[in-house]
Amino acid sequence: MSSALAALIGLCLSIVLIIKKLSPVYSLIVGAIVGGLLAGWGLETTVAEMIAGVKDITPAIVRIIAAGVLTGMLVKTGAASTIAKSIIKALGQRYIYLALALSALILTAMGVFVDVAVITIAPIAIITGCKLRLSKFKLLLAIIGGGKCGNIISPNPNTIIAAENFDAPLSSVMGAGIIPAIIGLAVTVFVIVPLMPKGDLMEGEQADDSDENLPPLWCSLLGPIVTILLLALRPIAGIVIDPMIALPVGGIVGIIATGNLKNATKCLSYGLEKMSGIAILLVGTGTLAGIIKASSIKDVLVNMLSEWSNGGTFMAPISGALMSAATASTTAGATIASASFADAIVAAGVTAVWGAAMINAGATTLDHLPHGSFFHATGGSMGFSVNERLKLIPYETLVGLVLAIGSIVTYMIF
Image 1 (cartoon, rainbow, N blue to C red):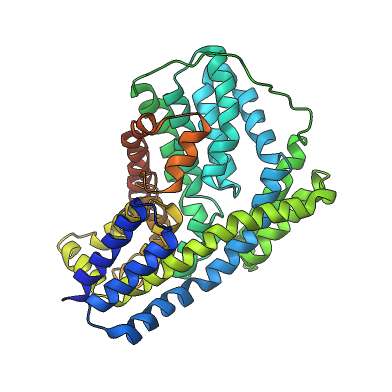
Image 2 (tube, rainbow, N blue to C red; image 1 turned 90 degrees about the vertical axis):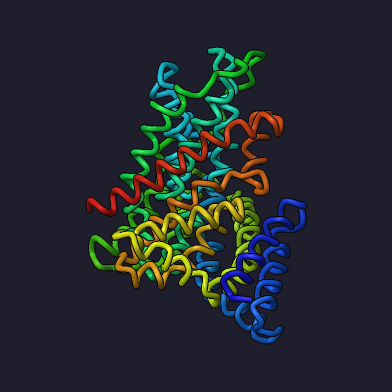
């Protein structure tokens, strides 16, 4: 059996096992083993390729764990809630969908996980939706759409690992996503959300919306601003501050600025807990990425796209989209795609920065499928049943396609 077909069978097996509720980590490992054995590599070579795949992404895993300091600060100090409420208050009820989407974009762009950003903003959306009798489908879509836009310009695991696998500066990869993110935000708020059927309108008692225990806005913003400035020193002044340093420094500054030094342990523990789950998932992802990278899949994809004048350009978002569909995860999708196809994409003439950026954008296209945690976490944040949550998938996919196409067009123009 050809190694490309064997790797695809292993990938499909992983998807089936994940859908059957087996641990995603073990599902990916089993798929990797089966793929290697079907390729005829033997057990020893298969394990060696799996370990090589994990080894390739180990530096990114370390940086992702370090990023937990910033994530923990934003969530546990109340900084994320302060930022979201400030944006919604500033834009007012008239522009509520824009306010919710922009809040999600900014929170994820600052380093909050997209599902955590949705969960943070959802209570505010519920309060506003009940008050104004708005569509809960449109409210959740606005938040998710904004989160997807922010996720391609954030120092989150998907961006970190894509940049690492392409050996590109994280700040430059984040910067490459800014124009597509703005396009995505505009299309989400002013095109996709208005075209979506209203469905049931929200009503009921309003929950408590007190700001009493939240830190001031300037304190909430200080940590993320410090992180962004440190990362920006590389393209601006040629001073390299690794994300492993910049991300926790920003988190510590934020903890101090918000007056939560006494709660630092809670912030760090929360951040480590969130990042540990991602790090473990990436170990399983790395094993499958190692098998795919060693197989001839990339050669098959290159041959398929060779007749296109911009085939290398399309390879990046397509691989990101396919792998995000397989894993229902932006992080896992970006990991497998960048680890497997980075060399081929660069060899096709795409720069490392834009290769990483387009894979990152492509990975938002189908990361919301039901066999992933994002689908269930976001639906649960606003009390959606599974059937209700399924209705959002076509619109979420459209948001992801806008981001991927926006990334391609921006690369071609600039």
